[in-house]
Length: 105
Image 1 (cartoon, rainbow, N blue to C red):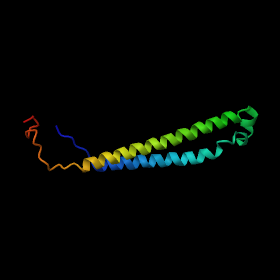
Image 2 (image 1 turned 180 degrees about the vertical axis):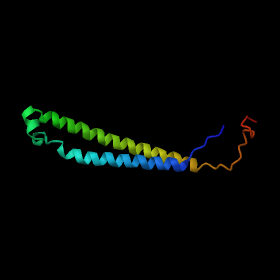
Image 3 (image 1 turned 60 degrees about the vertical axis):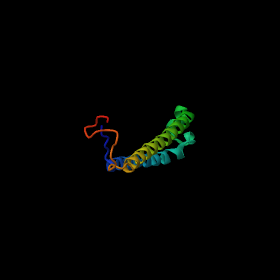
Image 4 (image 1 turned 90 degrees about the vertical axis):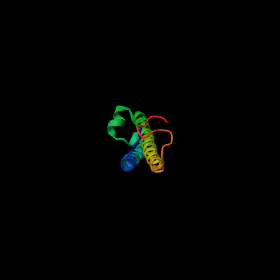
């Protein structure tokens, strides 16, 4: 049995997850200033009597964006760590436990 991986593609995928995390952080930065501003949301929120609901919604959005960014960071790091592990594997070392066809010795 042979296990193979393209380390470069793993690193490219990690960079993609890093970009996703950055976008989520930017979105959080755009949303969070409005977290306690339900009364400033505008005439519609005030007229509808929902400034508190607006604040709760923004709080949940901020938390979700924060958690999403953290998870994207974790995925990116896992891909980098896996690529590093594959890179540290010495493919030139002879397998003394198996024959060339993969059967046990």
